[in-house]
View 1: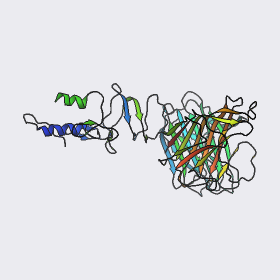
View 2 (view 1 turned 90 degrees about the horizontal axis):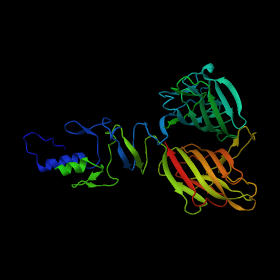
View 3 (view 1 turned 180 degrees about the vertical axis):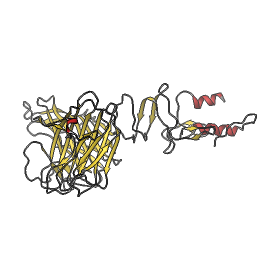
View 4 (view 1 turned 30 degrees about the vertical axis):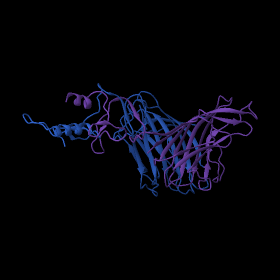
Length: 243
Length: 223
């Protein structure tokens, strides 16, 4: 218990010791007010002008994902678990999740980890920039493998995600690791590796390398939309950034 | 009194405990679950344990001091996503070849059937079956000029693993191998392990020969 000192009142040695213990003993909490009560998310450790030199800790638990500096840590912006999904709807509207709140200039290096679970229907998890599916606004060029097969000029969908493309499947899924550069003022570029048709059916799964060139360089990327005919329970999309 | 204030308020700020406010190690926290500091400003951050702040965490990093035919990482945290980063050198033999395999929970293919993928746009066979070929993409080149000779090949790359409990384990690897061996190869590879157990270990095994001394393999994890 902190014992505020009172003018013209003698402070006991024990009270003074308690005050030292209160501010310096054990776990150090951010405190404020005249009684130095614990606070939440009000005070800082150091400042931009007076940073600590080094911090040594066993574990770090931060509720924010904001990191600055030169460490270039990949930190997760957000993720979406499709806990219930929709295993039957195969007609529009497609199952859709929008990751908003992005700033393509601040978050211009993105890492996307996605796992798509689908039903027995052919489906592709497409990605749109800024929730816009107007082809003329996007002009995504799809490059695939060393053959550099380019197709889909003027397409709105980015071939950066997972897909399963066959029938006669049981619990098909796919997995993809993608990297995107979304900085305004230049073509958006991305590359990805994906495992498609991961299932226990009778169609061979495939490894695909794909690249994207998105020729719209003017519009700041503020969101990514992920859409598929069926996105079943267990599907996952995580968005990471660094720098 | 001034000395006491200087003790707690100046210079390096250390975790204190006990009636004499002695220095302690690994006991006390900065902040608490419900009483958080807002921002931390520092030049360097040194974390020996887990960073649960939505970061990729280095779970383990091995630099071999002697050669090893296999390396097993024991997992104490239930992450769903893993990345293995290879900066390694291994023995190879152009006649016999060398292949890297991945095994979960130190189990055999009897419990962890493995389905290899084909590389698009290669023509796909109509039927595939699970096999014991738990390939990881580490592979020697059968490079020219080395037939019958044991030589060193360098391996660099990443393997991404989705190891969700209750679902099949999915692996994608992107690995350069045979660097400086006269015939460098990029292996892009993926496959499925059809066991849905919780993964408690990830093991890499070479079919022949070993990773050499100096090989570095890092395991990263993320929620």
